[in-house]
Image (cartoon, rainbow, N blue to C red; front, side):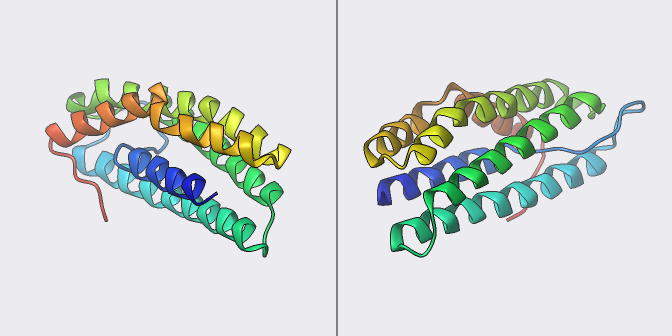
Length: 161
């Protein structure tokens, strides 16, 4: 179960390297406006992944449940999908447009990729949980998100700590 917790931390780090969000549409956002949206979404998702880590740690210690952890995964999936929809609806600066598309796509894919992990948590079968946790490192969505983050950083966008 400790490996599951570590893999969730890996997943959070991978996603947080490449997260963004916001709403809008119409006129393109300025670089600073887009940067601010990236950092706001990064903070929101970080909080969600921290909550998942807390739920998993509680389940490990017997002070929480895997059912609660599964609910937290579902909440993260909803946030990822909402953020992806918002990314698709805004007009980022020209230098972030392609990365924005990758980011939205990667977030949608990650939300879908987490279905099997959530199901494993709901089953409370540690073998299934471990097997699904091991897959986290190989999610294609992770590669998409990492590339989006790399592209944004290459364009001069910085991610808050």
